[in-house]
Amino acid sequence: MEYKIKIGLEIHAKLNTQSKMFCRCPNTALVDEEPNIRICPICMGMPGVLPKINKKAVEFAIKVGLALNCKISSFTKFDRKNYFYPDLPKGYQISQYDLPIAKDGKLEINSDHPKEIRIRRVHLEEDAGKLIHPEGKNYSLVDLNRAGTPLLEIVTEPDINSPEEAKVFMQELQKILRYLEVSNADMEKGELRCDANISLQSSKESSETNEKVEIKNVNSFRALEKALSYEIRRQSELLKKKKKIIQETRGWDDVNEITYSMRQKEFAEDYRYFPEPDLPPLTFTQEEIEKIKDQIPELPYQKKKRYIKEFNLAEEDARILTDDQALANYFEAAIKLLKNKKEIKRLASLIVTDLLGLLREKNLTISKCRVKPEDLVDLVILIEKGSISISLAKSVLEKMIKEGLSPVEIIEKEGLKQISSEEELEKIAKEVLKENPKPVEDYKKGKKEAIKFLMGKVMQKTKGQANPEKTLKILENLLE
Image (cartoon, rainbow, N blue to C red):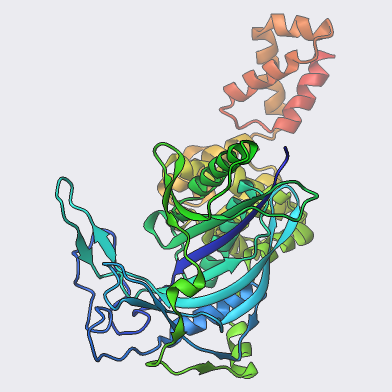
């Protein structure tokens, strides 16, 4: 039987504010930091303390809501979400329930084809602390450094229909959060966490949907895709055997690549929400919202569409150039110095094909690259003028990365200027033909690909400095 898959995501992003959500403790809890040094009576949940709303976190939430095409609420409030857990000292979490800061948005993704995923809501809340389980001990410890960290929760509608779409959505969202500079959104560091809700509809024609299952705290794009794929297989097998899907929360075992049951899924009424009495409601004017909207930069999907339209870039090249904001900024700085689309396309190709490959080999990021945008532009112009071959340009680029010099300095230092003199090229070509009679004979017998071997020999003799177009023409003339 064929099943229609329905997936909704609940995503938590740690916000890059200087202080925590409701107190002045530094929002700098690190993975290996000494426990319980970034805490105060407020984030420890001591009796009688009063929280205070972090204004910057609210601005960040509005900014994300606008970037996700949401309606921003003119009136919003905080609520108490009641549940008991050792790392939640108050016995409740301050969150938002019925009046989120933003709602009814959408984000377009492009997996197999363009598709809009609806955003149900965007709201603010505080993070809980962390339990530490010492190996070999029969007790647990509590670290409250993370308690009170500002989190932005983004909830989608169940519009996602495959694990691949879920992964692509998360990747697009991560890019937006980074472009907005509201979150580092690093999944491996827990700065971006995802809960996935998945249910299977018995057939494409049926409107009947089975119970949904929540997969909790998935911490990588790969894990999200694998966890959903496993859950589809598990639920499909149960339905084939006429067994009922239990609405529950399941964890993901990354080692064995299976989900496992944690507990039956809670409902909203289980949390006994009620308005937070210690915090005032918030109201926003249209003028305040517009002021924040003006701070939003060109977003990655907008930039990608512009690169394709304005510069005729291939979609994959445009995607790579916009995936990382630092790389997009580097490219933008360089294109300001170029005159035409041909040079810009050459620049894009040089970055995507050569520069990024060389940086990966050296385990470097674009931010650590010693090649200045203006120097890369000079290399592009040298290629376009025919002063240096494309093959030689890669060698020059590698030296630029290593030494931090301009292409002109490298070429002069290494004596790498392209040989374009027809007289000199003809002399070298005649030497190559004399030294390689067999390929010459093959060419004359109709094996035209033999000229590639001869071209290679010329390049070898000139250390890659021969002008390829002129060399090919000279070889063809000599062989006729």
